[in-house]
Image 1 (tube, rainbow, N blue to C red):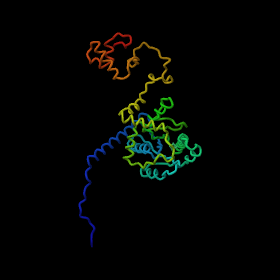
Image 2 (spheres, protein in one colour):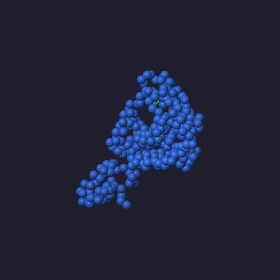
Image 3 (cartoon, protein in one colour):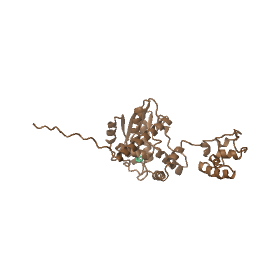
Image 4 (tube, protein in one colour):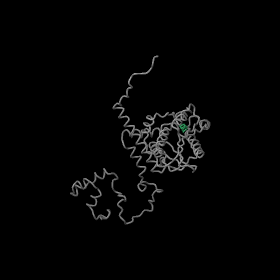
Length: 338
Ligand code: SF4
């Protein structure tokens, strides 16, 4: 009798190449950054609390897949208990691959619900050919998702908007609406019954793109409805991408600025009572120095020649505040010395 037993010694897998090691290191860094940023946003805005049921809206795009993926990971590590239910609204757009999301969600073992509502036909019927359909479409979608959240017992609705969506909205409002307004990380739904949260509020879109590619999410194209994306939004997104490439750090700085707003240095009388302010006679070291430049570089540029003119050593220019006090200790425009 012939035996089929093999006598060959099993070979171990080849060790990773330098390029593979570097790629794994980069993905590890990306993973840590994404989870840290989402965890930070959740904490900063108190987005998720003990006992919450979070409905994650899943469109099949890279943003919502990443949101669900990261929330599932954080759920394992969080010191609090909350549940997650993923919801997709199948709007019956032609060619929508209805089997993709259920298959993915089953493979992840996630509690989910697919809501079938033919909003596509409604929008097509109501909106004249060639007009943009997004406004009615998203209004219908919002109403349906709020209702579904109620039916599923979800008190939080999580959306996949990220840092660049926030900035894009800021610039659209700035350029075309004359308003300084973005996209809040947390708000109460317009029916007053749910809290809407955006846990990706600190996350860069490029990081989400990399994460989605790494995790190989089964992305569903977002052009099935045939609607043209808002041209102004496309242009603003292009502008931000170009800035990000030409001026590293600018996008981060702009984004950070919206968490460091100084109402007294803007012009909105609803936010700051300019008409009622009066001198108090009390020095305030944090008060405004109305005649000074506002950035450190300009301060240094002024301080250096002023120090030389006063016959002071160059080190005196290091602190403009110190220089000012040294030059005119009794000036009525300066706070009293301690
Ligand atoms: S792009 Fe299509 S699916 Fe998205 S809001 Fe506009 S009409 Fe609706």
